[in-house]
Image 1 (spheres, rainbow, N blue to C red):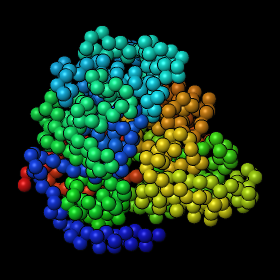
Image 2 (tube, one colour):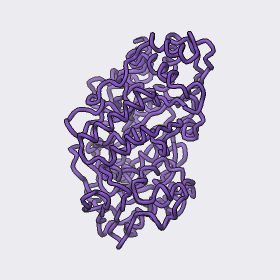
Image 3 (tube, helix red, strand yellow):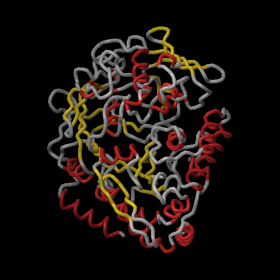
Image 4 (cartoon, rainbow, N blue to C red):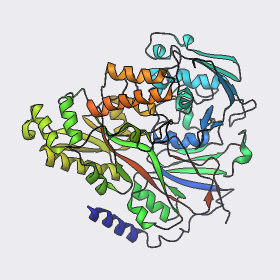
Length: 538
């Protein structure tokens, strides 16, 4: 099992003979002003917060867009586009006061209408927003999305340019957490007319209300952000430009870092940890993320809970992680292993206990009960996954383990990341790799994925009991009782019905050029943020 990691390390040493030093192509003052270059995964999705977004938007938004408010690492509110808020006693009316004088990067004022613009466009199913269901707490939002009500009936009121009022269907105890989601961020109504029109990747129309704005976008190569001189907190912004370069794989990202072509390379292969051990460049961070598998319940025999359970119990997660890399840890939870409980100080996973235990012998019995003794007659299912190193290695291990334990054959289908995303979203799969990084600091960000009305429910889950538990948790004001409901929902979905097959949680192996300071870690997601980063001049 260790031969694989040792081989990768050997290759890296061959590629990077001068790994201990800095590459010669990076300067603290490239061109006019301070710049950092960040290596990111291949281009995916749009930059429109109301559209079909993926990794590219997430890289863009953390530095270009201000949400109403967010939470810092201590759980304290950090106001951004808003300066204050009020909520009524039953938490159904939320009033936000926007920062007066805040401007878009083109100089026009940021108003409440810009927030409404994103919301209204996201509620059009043609926008294909995967986050639209997070707007459903707003009065009539779900009915509008489903075509049962007109947009004029949406429970959002704008009494003036700087006041935004949300009227909710029911109490929503985590509503503030939702505000960092794309569908709650603003899009300048002067330009953001429709999803797919191209305004979002055109520097002349892609207005930003955050510290940086779009300067250039070259498809499949890179995009560059420049400092937004109109930003309300511009004095705290130190960098002049940030460039995000697209790479097809992690190895290319690591090579580019060593060659001095990029300053930051994220989520690199775990052997890099040994290669850079003791070096200032290496930063290992915990990801609030879970790698798991969606079995498509609309496909036979995955519509049989015994089959889904057999597949899950037959996975040897310790062996899987020992092969895939030191940056992975086995998990039997859907909710990320490192997500903290809002009460008690423990992680949510630790508080809830073990959802199920692996058992290869019992898995064989379950498969026999389902009509496939020793795997006989079991159809060859296809497992789809992105053609990234970690996912390719994971797929090979799963194929071997399921053959060894259940005597079944799985066909592996590697896909370009965007194709894998699109097929999964359309339900065109049998078994599909899924990765979810928390969007906000609440287990609902995971459990909502399996609700019947979720726009991210790609696998056909339709469980009234599960829906009722999750809905009850959203209404429960007592944090201890709410936590119990969330744990019960996860146990039903993962430990009884096996709607997902959890695999592992992750740590992120990152390389950051020495001399770069001010990079922070988002408490909700574990992702790195660069809005107030700086670098030493050379």
